[in-house]
Image (cartoon, rainbow, N blue to C red):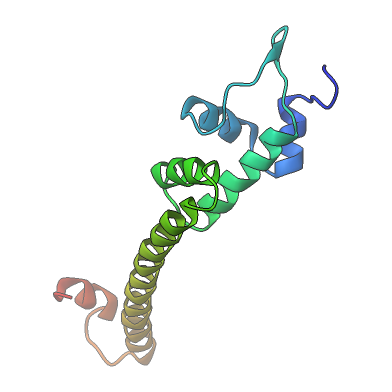
Length: 134
């Protein structure tokens, strides 16, 4: 392999990203197809950096389309920061909304579990909860 180049297994090790996920990101156009030496893909440090970026964005809950947009913005310099911030703000609102939904779910399940444990109902409190509208 060329100087500094390494195979997909090493890319996986360096980034903590599964090999099949790396291939998926290549097919999805998030990671450019690497040069090949024979039948082996040959990656470099730029690929590590890009894949770490993608993984971190996915861990923060950004969709693949949002990751694509963030990658485009990352290549754009300082002016792109406003757009990235706007994306992050919109995403943050969505995350907070999902957290509120999860809190409501947890409260409802907690009430049902407590009612089950108390044995105060002739039926199953969880089943009864599922029949009630939200």
